[in-house]
Length: 44
Image (cartoon, rainbow, N blue to C red; front, side):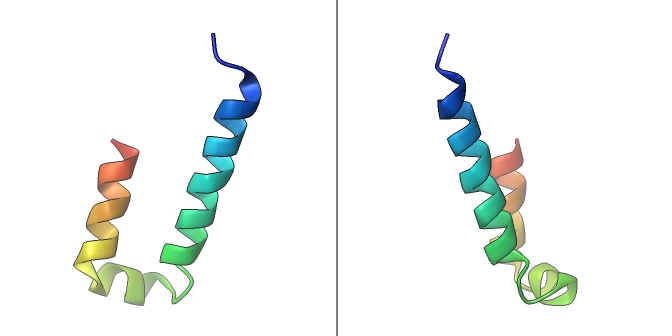
């Protein structure tokens, strides 16, 4: 089993990506299909 810190660092990195992708607001995020598609791909 991996050290819990590995998982926590990954979660923190993902939260940072979400914050960056949505900084312009929901309308800007959904208007940019590249970024919204990336979000879906990372989630799956």
